[in-house]
Length: 284
Image 1: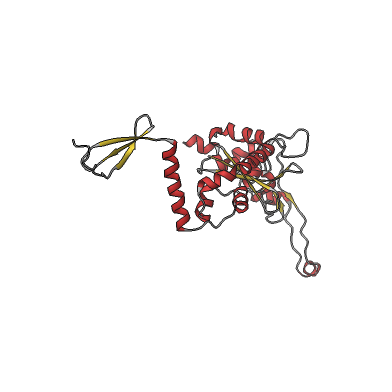
Image 2 (image 1 turned 90 degrees about the horizontal axis):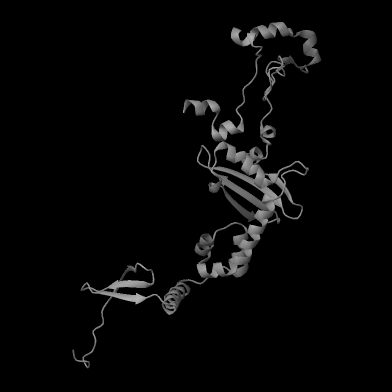
């Protein structure tokens, strides 16, 4: 082959990386194969060309402070890159201190007792003791943090349950080291679900005992006083049924009466709602 003959340029197409990952495999239209080593200079050239193209198409609309503020409020780098037309490289360059701050706040919150007493467990221990016995894979539990405008932090927890995913959110004051539940999931984990239940409705001047009580603690329905109009009492006196008469209206099976069972309202617990009742598990 004559060395003075000009070399023909060929169009090459990238096939992929080599098996060792250190070379690019290329091919031409004639089926010839080529290999190029992936060097630092090649990486720099490719990245520089891509970044220049982005800057030529549209300018960045977010400064460093706004990027860091959005990261601190919980936005992901992908969201910021898309909304602000900012390269991922720039976001990663300034995200280090923010991510370290969020990790520190999360660790501090997990070590903080949920209530201010010597017997109270830390938030991390409460989550473990509530979820692990119910079959939740603790490796699938995800923690996250985000900062509010008032300086407080949200501690967010996601975990798998019978409905697919359970959530819980606490508000955390890092200066006072206090936690407060923000939703039903957080109240259930903290053992506050009884406070979140609505009070039982009073029907016909009677109160029925609710909650988990033993046989010895169960009580018969009791009458409560009802304030009435004095004028109405004089003109149309209202007959108040006696307790025995009211008890006769309650439909209680004879077998249940022999066991000392009284009329009571059944309210499903938060465990039944989130993880299924024992009866559901037996039927499965």
